[in-house]
Image (cartoon, rainbow, N blue to C red):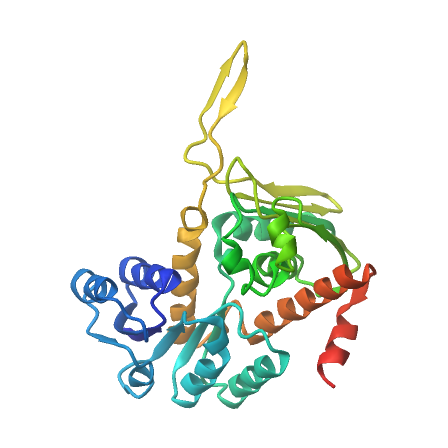
Length: 341
């Protein structure tokens, strides 16, 4: 049995607690920690999920020798520091994305993982564990060389402007998952990006210094190309689709819906809209990523999404931001050179 402590008990922390307690029998949540821990969350943890301890100070989890691993769900600005502390304390780590918003702090985490190579480190890019995208990757292996990848990712509604102002921008906050998905589906690295974007949904998003609509074209090291389109608002629901076009065919995934029922009449064809909320769409993926993390610990196998997988999308997102700002193609090598100075 792998004993786990969860650091950060906001929405995603509670999702991970539920996932472990209901879907990962090889693990047990023995402690949670959050400086703003509410009585409601504490009651949920201790009474419903039988968690043993609830703290406001996460260091109590790190100092507990009975805890094997931590899941870091705290605010983004704490991810890298807590990851390093946890590794030094001898804990396996699953860290929610992003590892950090600063390149040098991410590199410090990468170095800490190397120094503690006996420990597992996984980044929370949950879409790698989604049933559709996992099947898409597996089926594309049978179709020869990949030529084009297309990813559509559109939210049902934009977040509050207050969130937009502190989110780090569309590339870091929203598209980061799709940037990771390009690497995952292609098994290749992004070499160059060219971005078009604007505030087409809500002019206040533009006034806050961000965009809500974007198209990114990419050149990959394999010679393939990729295209991502993002929008903060799809009025029909949570739109998550992907296509891999290969030398010997094409494989694509469609949206999940409450049912696959279609009503066909003389006036047309009607079917259900896509699921409306990301937790509805990806709850199974959250459980799967935690199960894979625990299995990597038990079997001493590599994690599916490691520290390098946390770093690369960060660099691509930086390139996207620069491309948008300067209206030109930008290489990832250019960004790496800039950030390494």
